[in-house]
Structures are given as C-alpha cells and as structure tokens.
Image 1 (spheres, rainbow, N blue to C red):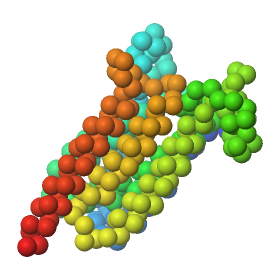
Image 2 (spheres, rainbow, N blue to C red):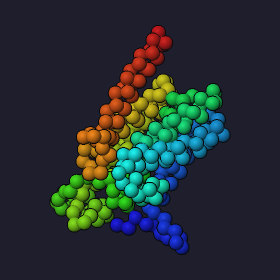
Image 3 (cartoon, helix red, strand yellow):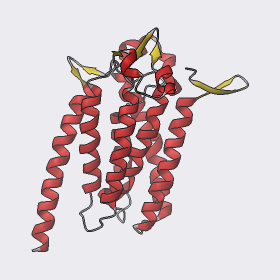
Image 4 (cartoon, helix red, strand yellow):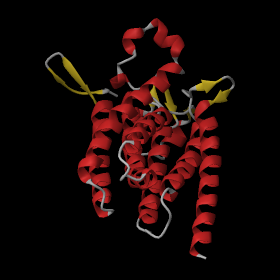
Length: 258
C-alpha cells in the first residue's frame, strides 16, 4: 500500500491529505446548503467555517501529539507532519467547537446550537471519508485476523490490511460505514425543524460515541489514559452529557408548549 498518491517534483502528495481535503470540501458545501435553507447569513457562516477548520485541525493534531508525547518529544520535526496521519477526532471537535463558540459570541445574531446542528451531518460525513486516509496509511486498524475472516472483504481491503505478513481487522472500514449510517440519521432529524436546536448535535455525539466505543476495543493504536482507552472514556462522557442535554431540552420544550 503506497500512502503517496503522486509527486509534484520534490513534493509528495499523500492520499491522507487528499481525503482530508475532500472531507472538508464536501462538508463545507453540504453545511452551506443547510445554512442557506435555515436563513443563516452566508458571509458570516463562511467566516465561521474558515475559522473552525484550521482550529479543528490544530486541535486534532495537538490532542494526538499530547497523548503520544514520548515519541514527539524525541522527534519534534514530526509534530506538524499531519500528512503522516495522527489527527484525533475528539481533539478536532474540541478545537473546532471552541473556535466556533468564540466567533458566535461575537455575533449575537448567530445561534450556537442551530449552527452546530447544521454542521453535525457534514462533520460525520467528513469523518466517514477521512477514515479512508487511515486505510492508505495502514493505520487505525485492529488486531490480527485469519485469512478466512479477511476473505469476506473486497480484495483491495484484504491487500491493504495485509501488513508485515499478517491480516488485520479493517476497523477504519467499520467506523466509516457506521459514520455513514449516522450521517443519514442526522439528515433525517435535521429536516424535522420542529425539534429544538441542539438535538441533531447531541444525537451525533451519542451515535458516533456508541460506534466509536465498540470499534475502539478492536484497535491496536488507541491513545491511552493510564489503563483506559482515551476514546472510550470520552465516548462514555459524551453519551452521558448528550443524553442529559436531550432529556432536559425536550422537557423544557414540552413545558413551553403547554
């Protein structure tokens, strides 16, 4: 598996970078469409997106570097090398949210949870696409599996998951397919404009976290927090927080209707 798509002179263009760029591009187009449908000022929305994207990339990289500090402290020149992989989704969500929160606080006509709902389907779709960058880098896979098990997958998946003489769980594929399913669920909920703002976002947190919790248990490259897999810890916290948010939001909405 060659992680390099092509070369421009001395510059190597990686599949990982191409797929991340594609994920952002499609996500921006989709989110802009939904923003226009909701009557959001597109100039302000574009400015928001231009702020959130770099903040998300920086957050995703910093999160990954912090939890792999033993390696990066000895190889500091690798810290900005995002094309080699190493973007943690949870760090990206946090970085993007903080940047978006700061921007929205400065523009009182923008609504935080409405915009978060608009962005959530684009985010999960981008994650589904971005996971294929892990495939080309032969990372974010699970433990070894038998030839019989991997033979159930398409030939190109089998070849990509054949690493150093062993076949591995294509966990990137599991998560990509799960994220795609969540994407369609979020689109359905987003169309129900009678729901309070924030429900789509919290549904995203719950569904993504459920899938990530189980898939993470199969992976061999998890970021660790002591004896715990960090992604699983964050997933549990996200499920609890989002569930409580939805409960109280719907309860408040019903009391207003009465």
